[in-house]
Length: 388
Ligand SMILES: *Cc1c(COP(=O)(O)O)cnc(C)c1O
Image (cartoon, rainbow, N blue to C red; front, side, top):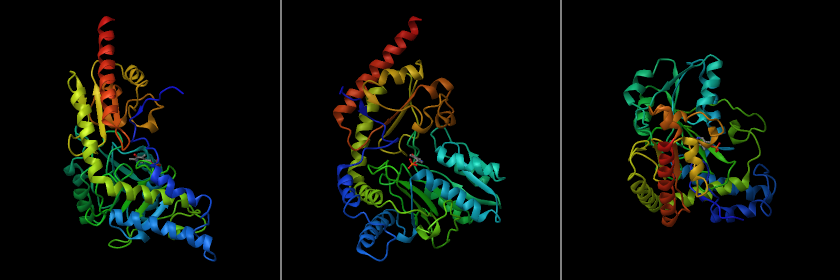
């Protein structure tokens, strides 16, 4: 097999950490029981493992274990939160507020609700990718039931001002949902301090397995009502039926446990690596740093490049590095990223963008190789452009 490119796409997914895999393996074969089986040890073992992860996740976000509802990932958690609240509260009001730079797993459920008659306000963002809190304040209405604003953006890494948003929602008795798929294990998330009512999580962005996530659903002050979106055996307190996927749940818990233990040192290491990459890239003219420079995920660097074609840029980078332009979910569509256009970029700049997602297993040596190749690629493309 030929040498594979350096993986720098950690916002799309991450490899499973060996420690996570080791924790999962016994739950496929030896401890294979159904956590809902209450009459024998196979069930008890599985239930104990699920309970342990519930405890880890709850502690990670300062919630209680009963407030964790397992799902297949953040997409499902977002759907359950948004459609579940809409269905449970539609008599109270039919207005929802969200943001232009949200993941499609938030935007699309909102657009779906629009077809059912809900009113959706989509807030713009400032040039740095953050929402304007005065814009948010202005968009509340008496019939607003939910605000859904992500914790960390999957393309440009910016961290929205959750504490201020939570405060504003609580003051107005509007529920606050946040998609924390990119944030869990990477920044401090405290649902009490930040006044979050619903929060979507996933394991595979934090070195856990794919296909498992969770929705935090507040049980006290206020008690959130949620209409289930999947009916069946009444698992997860009736909010999400389906046999729990014990191995994935064990992996999710282990992944979050490791990420929290290493969070401070890892964030520092990633910040240094990102700084190292940016220091080299920013020596070229016409390179834009996308998103707020400080209020962002440590491992995210997103740039737009003047004077090159976006597709040619990605093609030139490909042999050396696995990176994305825009989000992985929409990269099959050749439209510029909705996040980058929301920043006010021209179509050319939105197209000619690169997202570097630096992660746990990247080394300084890799960053140096990537930086060097990116510079050479951009210079060569610009040279070709001046020749024609
Ligand atoms: C990856 C991601 C999702 C989707 O999560 P899945 O677990 O893959 O369904 C949702 N929102 C954001 C911000 C993401 O980065």
